[in-house]
Amino acid sequence: MTHVNIVRMAWSAVVIALVVALLSLAPFVGAITLTGALVPLFAYTAWRGAWLPSGMGLLLCAAAFIGSPLPRDDVPDLLLAMAAMWGVAGSILLLWRMLRPRRS
Image (tube, rainbow, N blue to C red):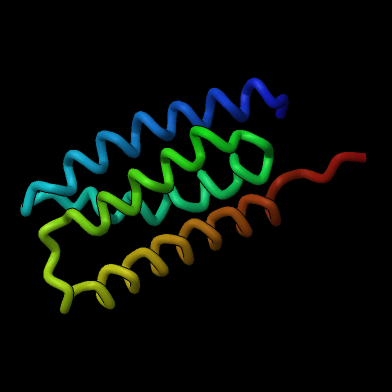
């Protein structure tokens, strides 16, 4: 992936993080769980060199998590749900890699 594509992906994720930050302020929306998917994406894009959008996205994710009306007693359940989401995604990725035909 070229640097331009990484930067585009990072800025697109910043827009999604802005929407997540705004939606997480509502007490009835579960958008806060999307920060569990966005934080690793921002870490990857920062690792590939897109520092500004990655930093902005991480700040938006932190603001979404801090500003949400989620009771602090529910934080362990939220983190467990994020870990379960990553476990399912990792299992699907592993299965896809195992079933994909090998290149000769």
